[in-house]
Each structure stands twice: as C-alpha cells, then as structure tokens.
Length: 336
Image (cartoon, rainbow, N blue to C red; front, side, top):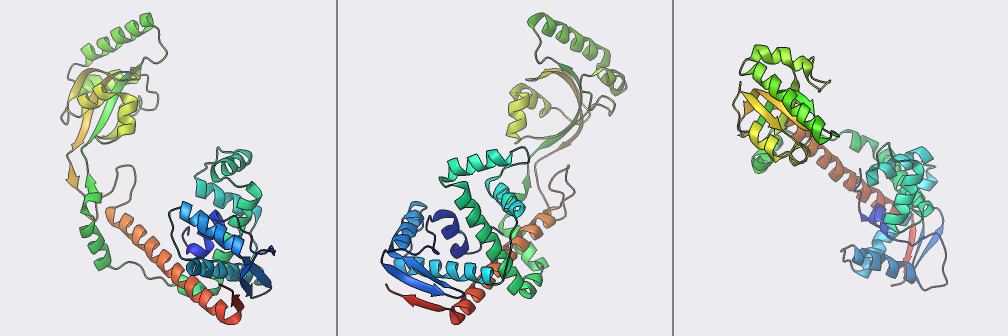
C-alpha cells in the first residue's frame, strides 16, 4: 500500500532530514519512545521547504506533528525488531519507480540518484523504514486489516451508476488476415511483394474457402496455421493505429462482418483482411467482460477498485490508532 499517511511517506521520501542525528541547531521537539531523538529547527524548515516545493502547504505545527509521528512509528518498528531484507527493498523501489525486470540493479540505482536527486543509500534507507513501519502496522493491527468487508452489491451498483462513462466500450473489429511483410525491403523487392499480394487477392476474391487456402502462404507465422487470426482492434487504440497506420485502420473499421477486403497497405506490409466480427460501441453491463483478451468483468474491476480503496482507508485508520497509542507511551517535548 503506497499511501499510508504523510508521516511515513512524504517525510521519508521528500525530506533530507535524519532525525536520529543530533544537531547544535535549535530544538523544536524531543521524541523518546525507545530512545531520545531530537528534531531541530533546521530539519523542520527543510521539511517544510521540500513539502512546499511539492505543492503541500502545512503549518509549522502540522509538519512538526507529522515528523514526531514519523519518529514514533520508526522507533516502534525498531523496538519490535522488524526486519526488511535487501531483496524486499529492491523489489519495493522497482515497483515504486516502475522499473521492469529488464532494468539491472545498477541501472535502478543510477535512475534513483538522477531522478530523485538523492543518494541510493539514503533512498534505500528510507524505503527500508517505510517497509518496516508498514510491516509493524500490519503486525499490530492484523485482525482489523484481515477483516475488511467486501464491497456490497449496493456499493458496486452505486459506483457503476456514478462512473458510467468509464465503462463505455468503443467500436471493435475482429480480423483474420493474409500478410506479406515489406519491412526492410528495397524498392524492387517491395514491387515483388505487391505483385505477390495482388496474386493472392485475385485468387481469394470474396471466397472464404480460398482465403483458408491462401492464408497458409502468409508471412505471419503466428497466425498462418490458425485461420490467419489477427485479433481484435479497438478504434481508440492509438498505439496500434500508429504502428499499423491510418490507411489500415480506416479501411478495416469500414468493413462489415464477413467482408473480405481488397489489398490493404499498412506501415509494415500488405494485408488481405477477413472480418470475423464487428462490435458496435456500447455501454458495458456489470457482467460484461472488459476485454476479449481477459476474463474479467466490469463488476470484477469495480470490486477490485472498491476493495483497494477500503484497504487504504482502513490502513490509514490503523496508522492513526497506532500513532495515538504510541504518543501515550512516549515522552514528547515541544519547543515551538
């Protein structure tokens, strides 16, 4: 869970202050749960400045209270002996910055230092603390977090009714094709490729039976033995439109179910297209699948979203309850 209150996210990620280091600067608070830690005026001012740069405007008292809570949670996790492995830290940072498996650990470190403007050691330590605090909260509040109720049918229906536009499915076409690849060909080779596809088109005409014969000569090795199955296109799929080209998209979306096209040019070659199905724009019902490729319904996606939202809300409640309890156990002195 990424958002677990300002006290264990924004301060850890944004602030360069290290509370455990004593300073000769003016003290604004002393926090003692397991050990005495000073929060200095310099640290407070630095944290306020960084938060302001991030567009977060809080009073001195509010920011200081958050910093105090941060120290309390960190000390509580340390006192409880919560451990976080290096592998868990790497995994968390990868997820946070969106780094895939193809990004090496060294590349990840370089990315963090360049983009976050902080050393890897400091960033990794902050991540370790965040993970340890999260683990501590789950340990202390395990029962509450384990018994979060599933969204009710009324909640699901209300969300669906209030967010109808999110469940509008644009026009889709499901295609088969015979394909001649022209990528990397010189002009003479492209001419031969065009003559080849023209010959296929003449042989097929409008016959689906002939299409089935010719498709085995297609350059698309993934589909040639599966009836030339191209798959489903959505009219709003801008990435595939960019890849295939406007001419291809405009042509196939003007065909009807059962049509066999003349030769169609794309950015990657020539095609003869057979339309297997056309789905006109529609509003998806709760039990409709959100895509042909995934066996997930609209209701499933709503349940996932509402469950995650409830988990986030309950986790924040748990953080507040834990910090309130820690304040009763700790000694905190303020000097503002």
